[in-house]
Image (cartoon, rainbow, N blue to C red; front, top):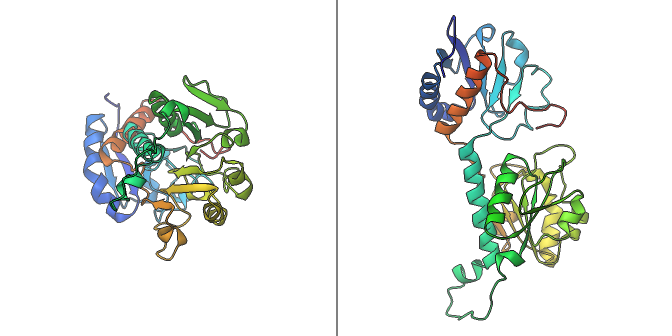
Length: 314
């Protein structure tokens, strides 16, 4: 894994300050392991920067000041907050990390099972009432739909299929996945979704994908699980569907504004579960290896991995 270098690389860490404490040592360790001689810092003269390790909420927003920039390596899976930046002409690589994928699979599988088995009635119903006789169907008789079959959606669909759920999926491009029924039309997928998992990227086409009309396509009493992006759902339309019972429950990990404001109606709604954007947290050690591998590839003349398609937006 050695890399031929005639001088140390200058790598700018551009993220919020608290992230530097988490990533400084893991990145240095990963660079050493991949044979990279690098100067990693949060403040480097722009004309000397070779690569940027980046979070879109960083103060760095004008990339035109980095004349030697070879690539921007995103710390997040989502790139919607940077992909449209016209000053960024160097390659942009999104984070695809096995640990990130594993975390998402575990979170999604846990919440699908929670709703499939009706765990809340027992966990929250410790009131002396013996609730016998209510038996959920077997997984094979429960239709779960995954919208978005990219890296994360594909892994979740396969995990749910392995548990014998009747898994359906939708993505813009046709996918052949063993144990998963692929739909070419969003409405056809929604129409069978007893439990729906949203793992789409945020693009102009997917913003408010679940609006009032599409929520109405869902079967009565459907459950929504959203660890993807907050704006995939029209919040007001979701609250209206919850009020009528057409949507039985929404488990939401992502929101239009984060942290979710204290007065937001999701907090107090009895049929909404809020989790604080934890479904697929980037882990510093494994993410640092992904970044180091990509820089090593670039320095050895190999194609970068996980380069964002600017036209598609992901």
